[in-house]
Length: 293
Ligand code: UTP
Image (cartoon, rainbow, N blue to C red; front, side, top):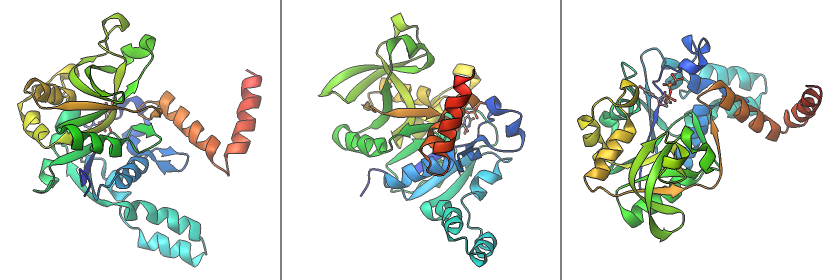
């Protein structure tokens, strides 16, 4: 049995960096080529062994949950027209994983959003995975390594990237101790966006968490932190201070930040260049466009 059955995807934020689009379209549904980011992370969760996905949405963002519901009429229309490949695409998200929703009435922060999913857990959920839908961690598979680390060390396991020191100020940075395994470190603290000279390490946080159920109790005891929001990292810091084991698995791969237009565009171009229908023409156009600038 996998270390977790339930994956939580917080998707109730305001998405202000994508305004004005996010007045009407949740940023989690913006297409990376033709597939919304939230389907990419739902696929990752299912591949890592999750059987249930709890999407935390806000009252105005029903479309996010709607995306995972079957659309029999559309499927029939496509089938009648012989569009088998499109039928497959339309069925993909509803068939991936069992989806439930939790509602966060107000965007009070990521920690608060995760806490809103507690009512969706069962007695069997000793740990839960949390995946931020605007963070693509590539290639997928890090959650499986995080589950192995939880088996070895217990407690909670986070994901880290080893970032060049001169870029570290953009990230939450872990203060770590060695475990004897180069890719697994014990976390003793965290610093948000430090100057390079003050950074306790070059290991920066990514949007993947495997959290012991104890985090829900910690989330009830934190007070608003950075930006006046209830921060998930404050609940994790509380657990560390109370002696709960927290480790990071270092992921040596790529990443795309879909949470802002610049990062989103890079992801879209990256995925499109790999796409057999669009890649060759896009590549040619980009070379010409950049050659002329
Ligand atoms: P972000 O800070 O990247 O998303 O939160 P945001 O707040 O929607 O975006 P901006 O900053 O206004 O542009 C990371 C993830 O946490 C969710 C977001 O939906 C996003 O997937 N989140 C954040 C919540 O679910 N609730 C919150 O209160 C805050």
